[in-house]
Image 1 (cartoon, rainbow, N blue to C red):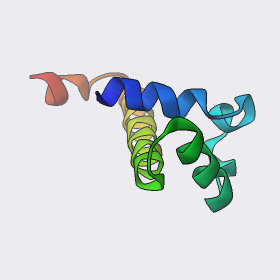
Image 2: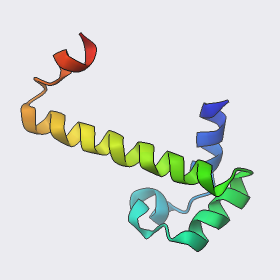
Image 3: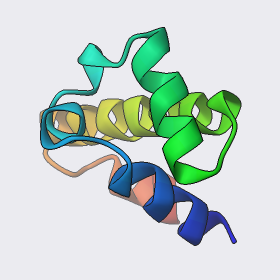
Image 4: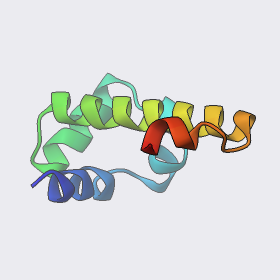
Length: 73
């Protein structure tokens, strides 16, 4: 399942990589993919999801949560 895949990828990362995903160069992504039993594409997909989610939360912080009504209803 997607949750198990995500968990495997995160468990294959070092503490530094989890705290600062900007350090994930190509060789680190290959190591994480191999260590988690996934493709590099899966690692890239997770990192993209993370960036988009972080961006969304920053926008919500700026709006003081007023954007929540647009998201949920």
